[in-house]
Length: 178
Image 1 (cartoon, rainbow, N blue to C red):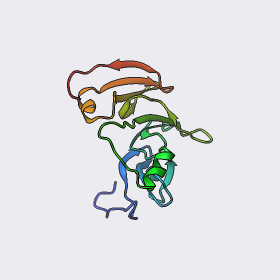
Image 2 (image 1 turned 90 degrees about the vertical axis):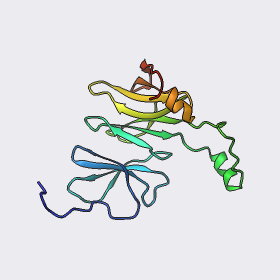
Image 3 (image 1 turned 180 degrees about the horizontal axis):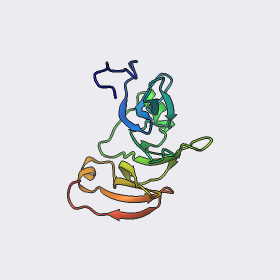
Image 4 (image 1 turned 135 degrees about the vertical axis):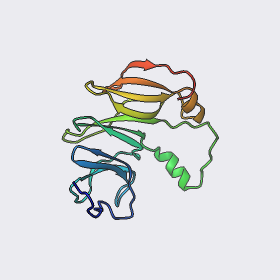
């Protein structure tokens, strides 16, 4: 019980943090810290100390959730950026055609207890807006849309239960806006 004790700073550098959550005896957050190419997942003990990187991906982690036992990490992120497009952009080719190029955000799953944790992409040809673990089952609840377009986010999104292997096990149709 801290009662009227002074606040304890956990992170005081200027890197910034996002998507903060408490799980077990740690505070989890996303951040792009020194040496990171993309936003990664970190944790810091509730007792304080230095933040430790939990997982880094080929692209920024947008949102994440941890399984109840902390073994699995599910997150949303895009696939690794196309190197050819990056090279062209550096040369000045940055043409954008409105609503022509769709880059999906995918659902990914990582076994954090593995010797070398690696992310497995669970979804392909659909936009993923959120991901959550289904308690007591090896399933994830994801909110999907057929494209990354704003209209589909509001009007055509639905929920799906998918297995840890990415197989759709149930879909829940919705009517109107979600």
